[in-house]
Picture 1: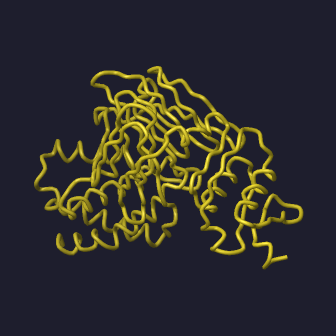
Picture 2 (picture 1 turned 30 degrees about the vertical axis):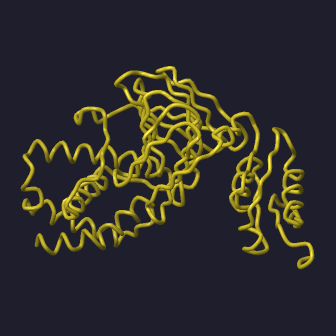
Length: 332
């Protein structure tokens, strides 16, 4: 039983856990994992290396972490207490089968499970400045969100993009979770772009020094004017030198692009102006562009100037906020 379960945990179970967290698991797949959960409960050999206290603490820590992931997926995903329990148990089995532990960084005691969470967020048409209880400042870009425990705002969960100015506290690090990245710092200013965590997360340091890690498998240290880019597809961190002021220019309403892919620029424009941009070819989408725009420049002016740089044109689809970018000489 133990060998069979461990084999499944390393293959099929991991796939189902990912699908469950994404909200795409079917009822049949949920029942499949539920069966593994019952087998896990009846097979004490899986956790024989732990004392009862260690087993309880591990399950509580994993429960808290996964509960937060599930909560972040709502309202699309509705989860019962028992569903989360079997997910935790299955995850414990997976970790043991893999021969190690996932990095779980919960600062509170295991018994303090029920925490009041504070959520700050922006809509699609503005930037928000937030002062945290410890005096740290956060600027949230459009369609962004931060969550933290009430009265304990030095551990933050970020979705979207945020610029942080962290108040220094000796021996009390400030932690930001963004996708699979974890940023640790005592006092500094930095920008995190986690709009597309399934593709990449970018961390740029304006001052001070931070440590960036991706689930414990790789860690790098950044100082002022350095940037780390986490590529989800390869699970790798890339480190570069960069002008940090460019990464945080959005806090002043500016748009700065340096050798950026046209498609990446389009993502930023879509969020800023609430539009949709399509490309007539991959060649246009992957072209590199350098440009700077001040605040309050109308969208059509920005898109028009970007198209002019690369010899393109654009047209708006009738009755919609969708725009097509195409080569002048090939598409009418």
